[in-house]
Image (tube, rainbow, N blue to C red):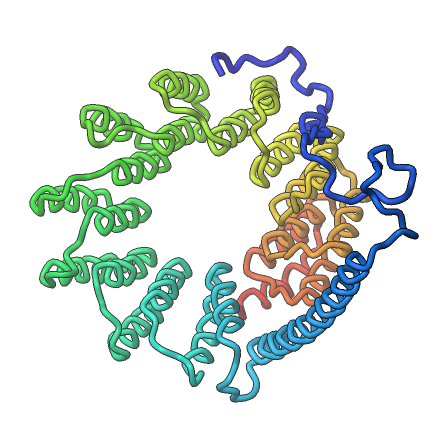
Length: 491
């Protein structure tokens, strides 16, 4: 992609990306394995028997084939019955897990483990811990190091350090081997939640245990947490400690530093790290380095600098990925540079980069903010035709765009789509809906969102109430705002 210059028209005609992926009939040189029947076959010769001219040997083979087919049919029926039995047992197990009722200790291992994995992946930590307790009650249960590590990492991501410590202790009590990975997971759980002192104490403990001494991965995790909480002094002390311990920063360490310094808009430090990285042969920049750098400049509106960095990285042999193009699209969209945004879209189409959910969310939001509802709606239909399921981010972009355009009937269409789909809605979507209705002065509809939330099992948060209070105050409905302030104070 030598140039990012776009077409003169900021909103090009909607292009049909599906035309690039038309299925073609492929020539297959192999003969048709299916036998041809009837006298009309041109390949018949004197050795071929018709239906009325069967020899005794052929009749024997036919009888054997019929017996074999009957046996296979019987076996299929037996297999089907067994499969149904297994499915029913699995469904019963899932019911026990979901309802949390009963004290069965003979549940199917595979189903319980699948249920646990689903909850860990979805970061549903409370439900995951309940399933884990159910797992430990089973007669076939044996302590598993890998399951403990996955749970501790999940709890760290969910900012539940105390629960992570409880599991770590249970892991020790059950006789599992506690190594560097286990201590690193526990340290990460504390550092992610901002308990940096506790995380540093775990780091010091690891140094004293021979098989648990921290490595570059351990330090990189702690460095990232310090950067996220703007503890830049602690970052420098960690880098100095790494040098004392004889641990050299790797590409991941530098990428972490570059990414977080970029997010904090510390561009001089970020550029200094890039120079250091280029001087070390063992730490060459990669696509993650490129993405972090262009995201930093693009996110701060420095489009020209972003483009220069993109060109330099590409000339050095680093190939962009779909994530790189998503960053470019997002940067151009948020700065209103629709010409270059369209150019990136056309480049992706030309070189067959498959769009992801994130790509669609970025372009739908950009065209929505720009007021081009026609292009936005076309992209929304296109993502559905390509079997990419919209999520709450997609729906928020649609609602916000229709609200800015004053198209309340279109918001109703979005809600009808939600009712007929299985999209998982969260409080962020409802808060967006409340904000848009309030901005449009549609107070009846705004109040109805609260009822909608109750039906969906979604609890209003402080943002919900503050948004409604602001809308009522601006609309001169001070009585309603006063009632909501009392409710907010009780939260």
